[in-house]
Length: 62
Image (cartoon, rainbow, N blue to C red; front, side, top):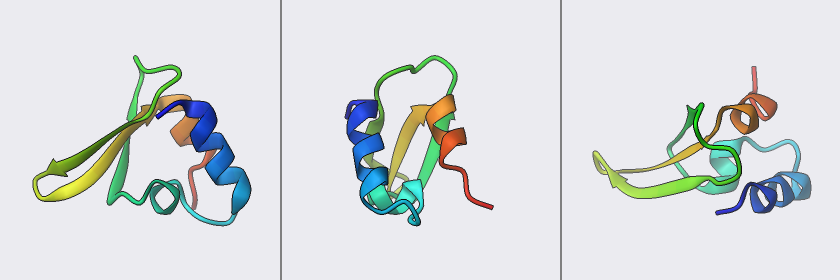
């Protein structure tokens, strides 16, 4: 999924978490990704995402 699409999802409801917007259990940061978010459907039975570190940091809550 392009990072721009994730930004658009977050703009729709800025109060939700990145996990909620992507409908995943957890988002992991990657220093090597720059413009894409990967969503993996079955990692230990859970749906996760791997996002650019800057994108994850931008939407960090708490």
